[in-house]
Structures are given as structure tokens and as C-alpha cells.
Image 1 (cartoon, helix red, strand yellow):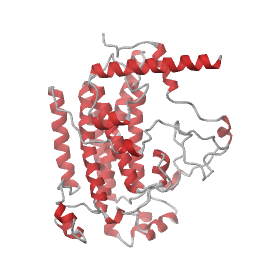
Image 2 (cartoon, helix red, strand yellow):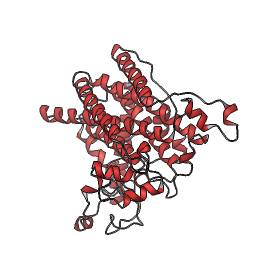
Image 3 (cartoon, one colour):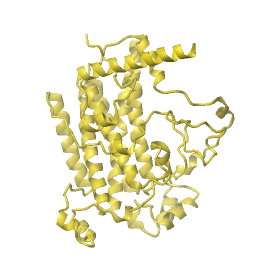
Image 4 (cartoon, helix red, strand yellow):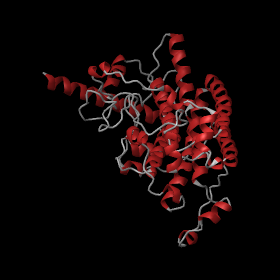
Length: 406
């Protein structure tokens, strides 16, 4: 039997070593009221905010639009406020008595999410896994079909801009956009919002089904549920980040609603009958996401999206990824791409496991950022070796801590 098929309670108990609890009891004595209506939607409010540019309602970077939204009684999109849900597990600073109200402290987050260094962000590569089984091929072909349909819907073309054009001063951006060779900042945001509104579905579906299965069979899950829910939360944060920059139209909202309705049920049935194929599908989908964000990053670095030059990172992104206070939008998109590379790596690795018996190797510790960025995933044996190594490290760390305390 594979070493991944672990039932040791020691392995499960050691998980807490990876995520130290930082929440102080005094925070519970300072409840902060949060107005749920601040994100409600009304047609009248949307029309009032967007009356100056009805044909460009997907963008809210202009100062006048943002000012109108801030003074609106019914905001349409998420604001620049701190993403406060509790202390972040990687924070190493003492906690204030009132974390939510203290603006000098970075916003808080409770669920695990990667924090990257500059060098780690540079390790992300566009890689793909060659499909082997019938299920693999079906998953990849489905992703390719959906990618083509999505490209048509968002007017996207992966056309490399020749160096001869990039050397021109100024670069003929308007001409390239008119030819369909270059996406505008409006269309990039539209593409991101649609992509992320769908990307948050698989993790929640998989986590839900495994949660129900665990309760139904009265068995432990082997560490899968938390990883899948963290993936769903991470994708949701991508969406909320881009929503601070965009005013979605009724058309965009209708597309999101329709796409989620169809995709959720299709993925639910797929995961119910073949979770291995479902994870392979997500892995292939994330391969395409890395390609998309890599393309956007290259366009920004080449000055092909001038509207985003020196645009500051939204506060919610600074809080979530622990970015520097002077971070730019480019830094945010690079962090999003690194997250997508992680999902690519994790889902391809999970697809290689025995879905009913194997322990999730990433429940204890994630693979390092370079591995996640450069490899498509672990084979089953690599996952087994990784899980065993991490268990040994955690047990040794626990032993050393016990000795030091005595």
C-alpha cells in the first residue's frame, strides 16, 4: 500500500505546527459592525454612478467614477477597505487590541494563502502535463474547447507583438487594439472577472463532496477538504481584488450567473463520478490561466497597457498577499499568476492519487514556491515521498520544541 494511505493520528495532529494560532482573546471583546449593504446592487445606483461613461461601465479607475462610488449610498463593487477576517497565520508582529480599526496595521486574514518573495514570483513558468489516460485527454480537450469559446467571448488573441513594433516610439497601441491584436484594459478586466468567477467553483464543489462523504462514511478525509476550500477562497479573493477596479455591467453579471449555473452542476456531476478526471480538468484549466496572466504581465512590462502604468495595488490585495505598501497593480497580477501555478501543481498532483485512500500530501506543508511554479505536479510516488519527509520534519520540530521547553 502506498505510504500516502496514512491513518496515523500523529500525522493529522502535526498539522497544527504549520499554522500557528495568532488570534488573541481580547479581539473577541471588540466587535466591529460591518455594513452588509455596502456591496448591494441596484439599477438606479449603477445608472447614477455610470452616467458619464455608459459604454465603459466595466472600468472604475477614473478618479471621478471612484469618487462618485465612494459617496454613493449603494456601492456596486468592493471598496479599498482592509480585508479583515482575523490575524494572518504568517504575521510575526504583535497584535493590537483592535486589529480592525487600527489603520497602521495590515488587514487580517484567517485562511491559509501563499505569501511570495520577489524571487519566488520569478520562478513561475508556463508548463503543461501531457495527457495519458482517456480521462486526461477528455479533460484537456474540454479545457481547450472552453478556452477557444472564452477567447471569442472576450475578444482575446494570443498574438505576440513583434520586437520591431515594440521598439517604435510611441508604440501604436490604438492601431494594435483596432486590429484585435491587443486587449484594452477594459477587456483585460472583463476577462479576469469572468475567469475568476468560474475558477472559484471547483475547490468548493470538491470540498463540499468530500466533506459530505467523510460524514456519510464516518471517516476522516485525509487532509483534502481544507486544501480544496483554501483553493476556492484564494480564487474568490482574485475576483474581489479585480472587483475593486471594475464596475460590472448587467451583461457581465448575467454571464457570470449563467456560467456558474452551468459549470457548477457539470463539475458537480463530474466530481461525483470521477474526481480524478475533475482534478485533471482543473489542472489543465490552471495551465491556461497561467498562460493568460503571463501574457498580461508581458503586455504590462512592454508598456502595452498604458492605462495601468504605475496604478497602485488595491488595499485588499496588499492585505491578502502581504505586499509592500507601495506595490503596483503589476505586483498583484504576478501574485495571482503564482497562485494559479499553485492550483495547477496541486490539482495535477491530487489527480495522480488514489481518491479514496491516499492522504493529501499538502495538508501538512505546501511544496516550495519554485517547485509549484516550475513543475506541473507530483507523481503519486513523489507525493508519497514528500508527505513522508514533511511528517518527519514536523515530528522532529515537535520533539525539539518539547526538549527546549523542559
